[in-house]
Amino acid sequence: MFINLYEKFKTFMKDNLFFVITILVFALLFFIELPYDVEMPGGIIDLENRVLVNGEETKIEGSFNMAYVSVSRGKIPYIILGLIMPDWEVVKQSDSMYENETVADAEKRDKLELEQSKNYAIVAAMDAAGIKYEIEDKENYVSYIAPEADTDLKIGDNILAIEDNELKDIDELSKIIQDANDGDILKIKVIRDKKEKEVKAKVYTEDDKKYIGISAITTFNIKSDVNVEITSKRQESGPSGGLMMTLMTYNSLTKQDLTHGKKIVGTGTISLDGSVGEIGGVKYKLMGAVKNKADVFLVPEGNYEEAMKVKEDKKYDIKIVKVTKLQDAIDYLEGLK
Image (cartoon, rainbow, N blue to C red; front, side, top):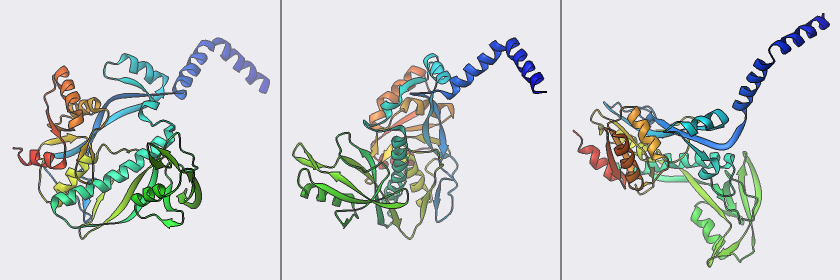
């Protein structure tokens, strides 16, 4: 029986060798991943059911939407298409990462930046709406480690204490480093993978200032009589949705409808003081907004010229509004008819 099966298999392979090899080659092409990404026009995310105030959604006639860039990892077929398609672009993965950072590190950093962005959005919206709150339970996470750093800290470490001093604010870390001597080895207590761990970092001097070669992102809880929750999906990350999350939150807190029935799409980071920051991939975000029939595209000042050039080149019929701070966007939307 086994001999017969073997003979049939040999006959099949002999008669279909080219077909089998072709299938194997195509399968390998989709499994092999090169260190490139393919960026292309993205889409939008409606925030109506993403922002809850005291557990409830705010119904509006129009919509507030975050814009995003569609990205495919460097599978060979996508790279080939990226070199052919006019609105696709092949980019090195390293271009979206810091020096001395892996793809996994960059993904951790992007997740941390999203959580921080949610907190900033709530604070900026509450400030604009005149709602009282307190910031508590700060947690400081390592988001970047410089190439020159001499430390066993890792991206995503939650810093609890430094030199046995409990760390409540990231400014305290900077003060302890400045008070140390060049070459000192500082003991740092962190939580990593849900376990406490003691690590070390060496102090070094550069331009008359001391460093241990890390950056940190701070997250916190917001205590208020008004409870605001911003939800996100597992695959979402990064800080570029900050402006739109803030606008949806502000709209919900003030119980109004700033959309006036229009589809509002935008992008931009948000700071605690309401400043709107520049982002990457604005052309793909604008293309996604137009594809989804947006009426208005809100864009940071630093991305405005590029967005306008794309609009003119492609003859898009969409209103592009430049914003430098949250209040600019609010003022514009309040004037919509």
